[in-house]
Length: 98
Image 1 (cartoon, one colour):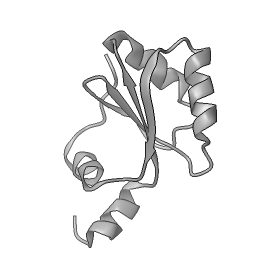
Image 2 (tube, one colour; image 1 turned 180 degrees about the vertical axis):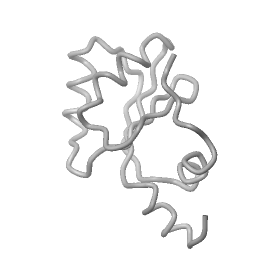
Image 3 (cartoon, one colour; image 1 turned 45 degrees about the vertical axis):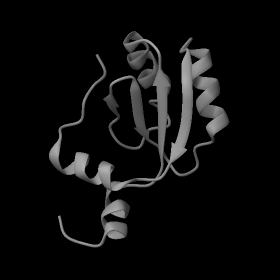
Image 4 (cartoon, helix red, strand yellow; image 1 turned 135 degrees about the horizontal axis):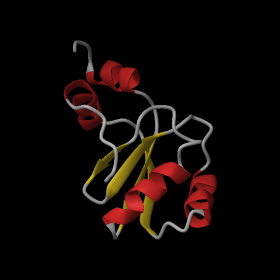
């Protein structure tokens, strides 16, 4: 890929929600709970589920959806795309949590 870091990040997309769980069995329920907020495929790395979300997604709505699904999230964060996201989108197939 070519372009400045900022240009590459824009191509990958905007904001992400990261959900850290204590048990890997929580990853799939978390992904399903957040499917309505996602605007691209999710990925999991260890115990962290990363969900690219629509721009209008409210963090409170994400937390409520996780709670309603019975997901015991240890941490929930909102962040912008990083160069790691760019790299992963270019080199790795999207993972489905186990």
